[in-house]
Length: 326
Image 1 (tube, rainbow, N blue to C red):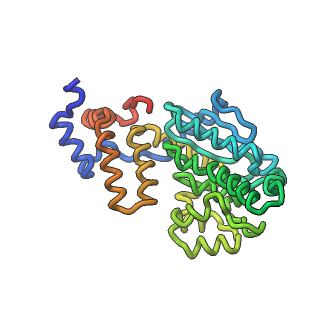
Image 2 (spheres, rainbow, N blue to C red; image 1 turned 45 degrees about the vertical axis):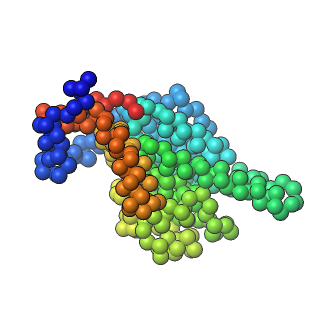
Image 3 (cartoon, rainbow, N blue to C red; image 1 turned 135 degrees about the vertical axis):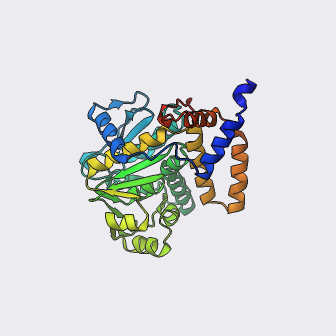
C-alpha cells in the first residue's frame, strides 16, 4: 500500500514539469475529430435513462459518462410549466448523486430553446389565497424561493453543465443558462431578459448571475431595463457564450464533443475545479485560496494523479486512463 500511495521521484519530477507547462505529452485534441465521434454516437437511438421519468424534460444517455437533458415541450416552445419547476430539481439532484455521470448537456427540443415561463399554466399560482397582505407575502416568498432552487440546483450540481442554445432563450431561459457552466449557441439564437415586459423584475437568478457571467454591468442593465433581444454575435462578444455555431446540429455535436472531452478527465479534478470556481466567484481571493488549500489537502491524495502521470510517462493517450467512479 505504501508503494501505491508514494509517488516516485521520477513521477514527481514529471508532474512538476506538467504543472509548469514544460512538457507537451498530452497534445491538443481536435474538436473536429471529437465532433465526428460524438456525431456517430448521436446517430444511434438515444437511450432514455431509466432513473429519469418526467413530463416536461427528457433525459438520455448521450454517450459514456454524458447525460443529455432536453427541455421537451416543443409544441409549447418549451415553456416552463408547473411540472418543469419541480422536475428539473429532481433531475439534477439525481445527476449530482449519479457516480457514472461526469458531464451534462442541456438543450431544447423543437424550434427554440425556451420561451420562458408558461404564463397560462402558472397564472393561478401568482394569485395568493386570502386577503391578508402579510400572509400573501409569505406565500409568494416561499413560491419564489422554491423556483429559485430550480436553477440553483444546476449550479450546485458538481458535474459540469453545458447549455446548448438555439432559437429563442427568453425570460426564465436566461435564468437557467446563467446557472450553467459553459454556454454554446447556434447562429439563430437570441437572448431576452423579458420580465419587465410583463411587469416584474426577474427573480430566479438572472439579476444575480448574469452580471458575473458577462462582467459588464452597463450591458446587463440595458438588457434588463429594455427587454431587448441580444443576438448570437453580441452574446459571443459579451462573453455570455463561448462559441457560436452555424446551426443546431453542428452546435449539439460540438457540445457533446466538449462533454466527452471533459468526461475523459479525472472526475476528482473536474468536479473539484467547478466547486472551487463557484466558491471563488463569491468570495475574496484570500478566502478562496484558504478554501482551496483545505480542499486539496485531501484531494491531492487521489490515485487519479498517479494514474495520469504514469500515462504521461508512458506516452499514452490520457483517454486510455480509467478513473474510478465518483
